[in-house]
Length: 332
Ligand code: G3H
Ligand code: 13P
Ligand code: ZN
Image (cartoon, rainbow, N blue to C red; front, side, top):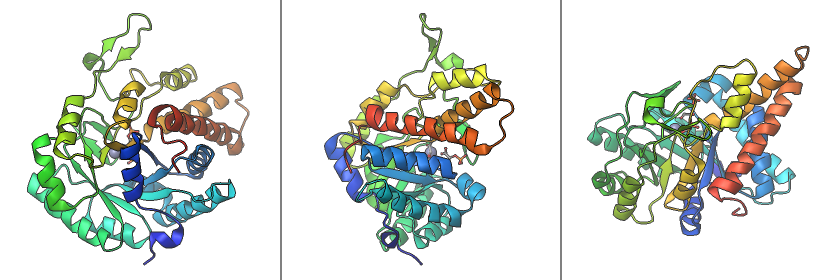
């Protein structure tokens, strides 16, 4: 049993309170490898942004959970080395699917866990979430729960159709579970294909797909029910078209990849939405940079020569999200 406090990590309680009062959102970036983590820490240290490092079930399977935890611990030390005196770094389990998994992450030094029981019937979601909260809170670990189901398919996290969060359920859910934050469904979804072309319109000038807007009326209704309660948005990648173009121009095939327009995320960040999850955009930045090197220099075989540019591109992306979309720069 190791407490997150011994590792220099923080839970989300203070981060979220400050973010709601300050009208910005905390970036929640997924990581699976060293280059991603280096890019996140550099971007956050340079911009002085608090950050949530997220570990998914897929990441645990890919990179080994022990290694990931020590990497997060290393991230705190690396941040200090970069001149960030008091790094505000949270280590979070993304989409935890059982009490056992959440408990093991709490015992292992995570400072925050998500229990995603949103696919279960309402009362079962409450019962499981409540059990996780009881265990986590005993160790001062914060808990994110989810109400409503996101559409989209991504590795371990899948749902055929979305069910928007019902505002009339949120008070009962938050009160009975005691969760610290609530992930809601208002039209975002996981992955790089968030909407079908049929769901979009076409910009006559650029020919690009324009996605339908998020359901801000539902967000407003939720905030009215739970004033000041921390809200989380999953599936918030914007799928930058420049990356899609580079990927497609360098041997990739990503037709009709589309995400959430940044102006909508900017608007959400100013509200009670205080955690915004971004994973796919970092995958796109990485892939675009690697594909370009492979195409431009077919003889290159030193991984540092293509993972290095990929890391630089991800750092640029994270910095952009922090400073231009979420507004979390200078807040840590
Ligand atoms: O919520 C989904 C995240 O992007 C994690 O995806 O399960 O493929 O690691 P993953
Ligand atoms: P994206 O696929 O839009 O990056 O969402 C990531 C996410 O929600 C992680 O939990
Ligand atoms: Zn998610």
